[in-house]
Length: 61
Image 1 (tube, rainbow, N blue to C red):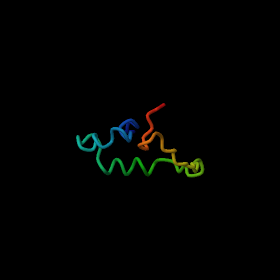
Image 2 (cartoon, helix red, strand yellow; image 1 turned 135 degrees about the vertical axis):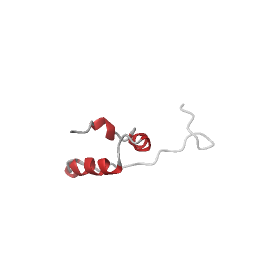
Image 3 (cartoon, rainbow, N blue to C red; image 1 turned 90 degrees about the vertical axis):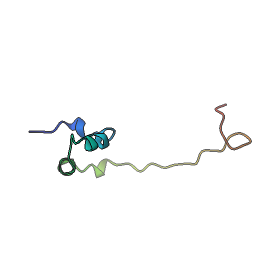
Image 4 (cartoon, rainbow, N blue to C red; image 1 turned 30 degrees about the vertical axis):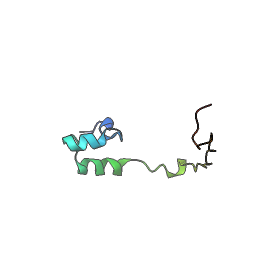
């Protein structure tokens, strides 16, 4: 029987593990079945944000 993909959502997986809805073995099997999407990955650059205001905090102005 196929597992519901929603059971493995990162936002709920920890809770489902604690409640016994999914087991560590089911998680491992699910991860093995996922496709390798390495070629779709992008490298993101990051620039530091400028400090705002006198105290270094941006007041949103």
